[in-house]
Image 1 (cartoon, rainbow, N blue to C red):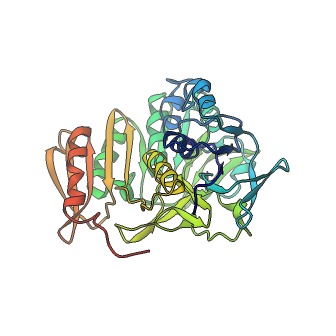
Image 2 (cartoon, one colour; image 1 turned 180 degrees about the vertical axis):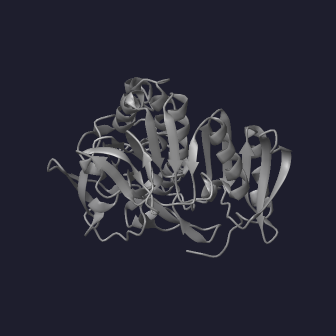
Image 3 (tube, rainbow, N blue to C red; image 1 turned 90 degrees about the horizontal axis):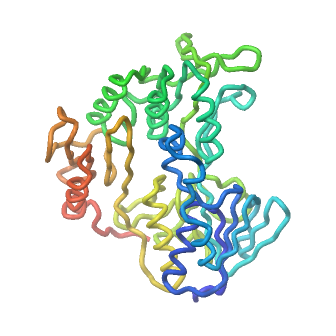
Length: 396
């Protein structure tokens, strides 16, 4: 496609802002519009479960850019007005307020919405954490709570449990995995993380789903387990994952399957692209479609899409990466570990909780994990390329 004269970015997220900034940085001079469902200008999400929840940061510190920097972008920000429908053929978006916005190209950056448990919306004392407003409300609830149960043992659940425990209340973390973040870290490092949580007083109830919520007179009193036991709580935080915010795309003609399905260039249809948590694109070097929910992807993918919009024919092929900070431990993961990978510690010591481990499968490196060794982990990232895990394969 030729360089579009106007671009509409749907989603005032980090990925949405990154698209606008990348276009301007690359010399784009056309009209830019950013549509956001929230009233807040683009803000940083990783601190929500850590610095904002703990009270170390006030909400005013979370915007990604000061207002003056946004003004320099010469983009129109339409905030507090959610997209409700897309006409892909016309490249137009209808909003909740009734606006119809058109552009030569549309970039979908609507992110995620949290999964919930049945009936939780009707109960007081049950929270989720996705938005800035969620974080502020949860911080107030944690300050008033004495017993907290966090449902969900992935990255977000583990971070919430760690932050809440450091604030003082008794905290229980319950989830289906053998140890917190087993799917993201692999079994060995996940056991170390479980030990770290336990040492700081987090009660772990692992290897079990939940049956539902217990309540009395409209307020949550605990979390029910399949065997009949109840974990008592005066605050329950549900962190059982998220789903891409794609409901508004029903009838648009775009293919939606756990995200907006895109080609290797993050293109969902002629003149329609997707970036960030909502995008499921074909990773040409891995030979598969994937969707990444992390801050790094929200920076790198918009830059790749901006290049495509400006005429560069280059597929998006990153090495997947995420990090988490819990109880003073900084964990970084490059690549895609799997439970049956062979794991070798190549630097440091697990005993000292300062090490780099390389996961491999069939003799090829698949992932690198750093525990309190960020520089060394970054250097070992090259193994993922040298061993062929990120060499090009045939594909669309």
